[in-house]
Length: 328
Image (cartoon, rainbow, N blue to C red; front, side):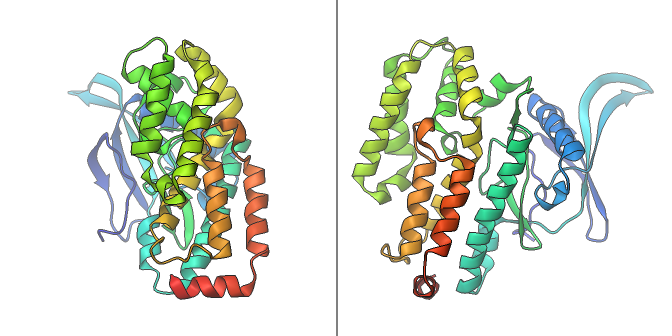
């Protein structure tokens, strides 16, 4: 059971009702701006997304609780009751490790990537950014990947956007522009200097993203140079200016960035076993690296990623995949 997962909350008091025979699972969650934000996003999903349960594992009902003492309300709006369908859920990384067949591993790796791109497309249709796609927020149910945990989600109507962008959630798993905003808020600065920006960039690409080193020092140097060239113009801009620019222009690249970074960790963790001259691996890694480009203007759009990934799949012959199967 340690490989199974029920929806985790850092602010939970672990008050959960759950058994294998129950159709539903109830969980009491202590309120915070993150939980309040999740409630707002989940309500959009429940009310607007057709067949949402095929893409997301979210509570099917949310009740605001008023904690009372001797029949008098003492702390209104301090807790939520989340009601979920009870499901057997496994983290993505655990699921992949459990596959005994190399054929199924490759098939699922490809299938899940395409499926999760479709999931992101659904979110984008409603102007929603999940905000934290990672190994911890992709779970598998009946061989289908679902996104969970919308605490760090963003919409065009988010009232907590400053707090969410400043919250240090998997910070170095996020696009560079969000890392800059987090640094600005964490250090209680009104603006970032050129020195601040360049220091953050150096730290990110030299110390915090070691997987890029696997692609050679040239790619690391190129991304550092590209990042400094683009983000230098944001020195001495206010937090609000930066938020407005980044949200209006780049929010559609944020979830694909996080998903691609997650897949880079999967593929590079296999680098000792995968031949770098395998055509599928080379082209897929190239697409993933391009999707996490530091300059948001140079990242692929979602539709471009989908078309490029389809091209990779359909232009690799049987020999390429047979070779891959032998080494997984």
